[in-house]
Image 1 (cartoon, rainbow, N blue to C red):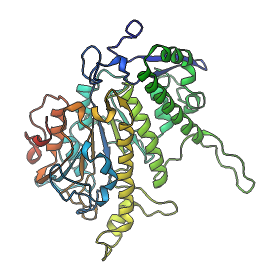
Image 2 (image 1 turned 30 degrees about the horizontal axis):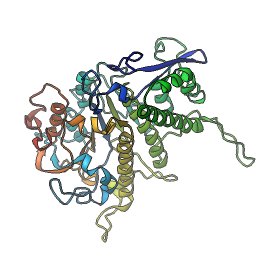
Image 3 (image 1 turned 30 degrees about the vertical axis):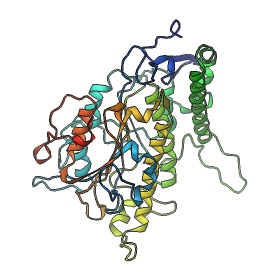
Image 4 (image 1 turned 90 degrees about the vertical axis):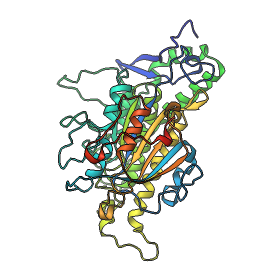
Length: 445
């Protein structure tokens, strides 16, 4: 392979399809890596990846925090879906947002404190944590970062470059797929610019690079051949999933026709949100694995969580405030249902990252995912004990498998830990009482 492939960079298969250029990035193969699969063949470390996963309205205090501190812990009942990853992640409880006399803005102050180190009353004054990280690890990829949300609202993004520049979220898995696996470039200034996800989904991008794909399979060793086969199969399956959502259903005599759908059903109905996020998880994982981006941001539901069950207007957010506490259970069962679906989706995201093998490890091993909400107890908009998790080892830069319990420490200690572990040259972070120069040393390598 050394005579036909530059092992210091990721190769891309390129082809034409319907007159349009298509490209398919390749995962890290053995021929790109050193003998242990821990670095590129030229000795360069595998690039670290960072991601955020946000959901609104928190979790129930006492039901998500592990009962044991340190390494010998198990997930609590509301985070049980994350149990398979307990040794690959860290649970951080007891963190707090300090207001310094400023009035709190419900469902806004917490998320801004965690992501910007500040508690603005209105417009945030600083770049978000992911943008700070992207300035260091996201400058050499096709996409500086990728943002998605399952709510159907592009404005449901917490990623911002500055006080006035935010990064809108992609709401359509099919459209995101087109951006990542479609043509390298389309002129955004063209008057008729309108990406059509159906072109890329119905006519597979893999079909556009068939000859190169077959030639590559003949050149690589048995391990890489198996890995490529698994990768191409996963891409094809994802294309088929998206294609189903773009096809016109078979006619039914008793059904009045509606407009032909062009995408997965969008909106806040929980089953659709979960389904879209499972597709997003696969696309984002492949985007990172193929070196298209090193920074991703997921908003499962905005802070005032609009999630709802089919056939009802009662949302997760409304339930956290209006549903009575069950006297026997000690919590709000209807609101808690949504919390369970959120954690399950986070677990699916981690599983997807972990399913992509890279040498002796997986994509999760070189990733660092910050998963968090904006409140500790949504019923009272609490800014104490906000659920926070760090998943993945950041390429060996973060220790995992711990429950770290803080006693009212500022949430910015997590953000500082993230930055320093990812190589951001920063000694302190945050404003006023949120300012800290203390990372969580228990997690630092």
